[in-house]
Amino acid sequence: MSKLMNTLYGILIFLFGILAAQVWDNYTNYSVTGSAVGELPSDSVEEKHILIYDDRVVLLVSGATLSSYDSTGSMYPVLGEGVNGVRIVPSSAEEIRVGDIISFRYSGDVIVHRVVERGEDSDGIYFITKGDNSDKFEKIRFEDIEYKTIALIY
Image (cartoon, rainbow, N blue to C red; front, side, top):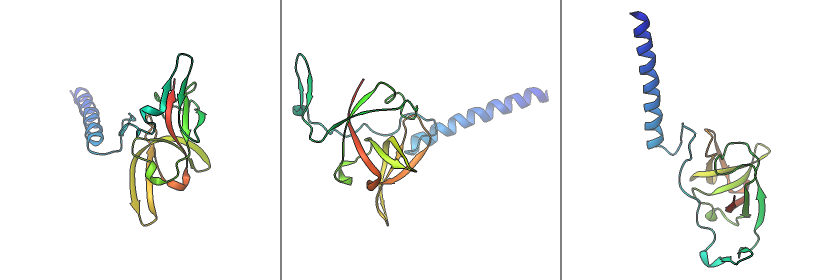
C-alpha cells in the first residue's frame, strides 16, 4: 500500500508543478516553460517600402545590412542556421519595443534575443531580453544594442 501511496504522491506533485508553471506563465511576462514570450516585433518597414517584382524583392530601408544566425537553439524556431535577416542600427531607445528581435553585447558575446520588457530605473531606460526557446533573461541598456532585426527570410 505504501508503494502505491508514494506513486500517487509523486504523480500529484508532478501535476502540481505543471499547474504552477502554467499559472506563472499566464500571470507574468517571464515564461518558465521556455515557449515564445510576449508580442510580435514592431512594424519597422511600411508596406509602401516593400517592392515586389517578377525577378526581385526590394526593401527601401536606409542603412540596412544582411545578417545570418548561429544555430544555438535559444530563438528556435524563429532563428537558426540558414535564416537570413535584415537589420538596422537603431538610433534611439524609442525605436526598440517589446517583441523586437535585437542583437546586443552581453558578457563579451553578441546575443540575438527578443525584448520582453522595457522599463526605467535610476540609470535610465533598460530592456529585458529572452530567447524564445530559453529560460534565461538579460537586462541590458540601449548602449548594448547593436542591431534591430526588421525582416527575416527563410
